[in-house]
Image (cartoon, rainbow, N blue to C red):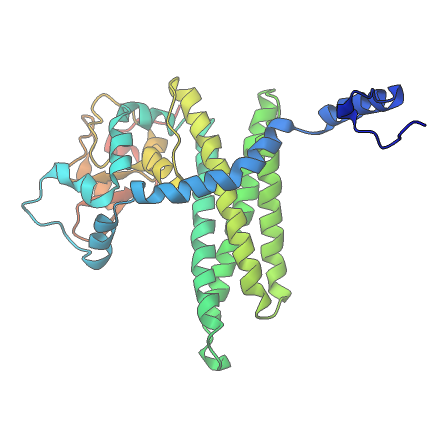
Length: 330
């Protein structure tokens, strides 16, 4: 009598219909599933864990504490080459020193990079609003009197988070629209990033009708998804930068990417071609940044915000006019 439960490893050959059925299943799966994207999704938690494990090697805790506990002007005897060590972890200083600042200034205004960088900035703002709202919700769980609830601040942060999520969705759609206009193949990562952003925006909107303590738990889940999306998008931006720069770039955390795009506090920019778009958002310093001839640093200060006050470090707030000696955008 034939044993229908016989182990295939004993040498039994599966029926022909079974072999053909498995092959047909494989064919349909390969046409339906994006295996590479699936692997990225599966590996995402481990990459995030690697990122968390590596934070201790990236962040300079002592420098961070000095900045938080003692904001204010640098001592007059601190040389310019110490500014970066006060403001940046060692890994970021090494990263910024490995790429010509004139190249960084050029790639940050590339038409492929700029919309991706805007999405990256919106994601960082979204993460900040979610983190601060999560802290307020955690504090609110311990408050027993309704009058003590920090509702206006919490509502304001959630409003910022919703606006940030919608800005991320809109920004990713613009990136995809540009890809379509240039007849490039739609990237699976962009599709999935857009879907994640839409899901985050939808869930933030649904928080309006949820009563405590459910919003806190849901907000924590949304925050974790925003972290995952930020890490995915950081690699999208990094790959775009590498293509424009025509050179490989190392893996970077979102904080490192932000420094790569905007930090020119210790840079010689003589010979760099600057236009109106080049300077918005740029971080520069009185003692560490050397500008091309014709740039009026005093006029640039009027269009920048100094932070912390008295530090001599500025961030350009908006497009400077031609009185700074900049060319019109091409």
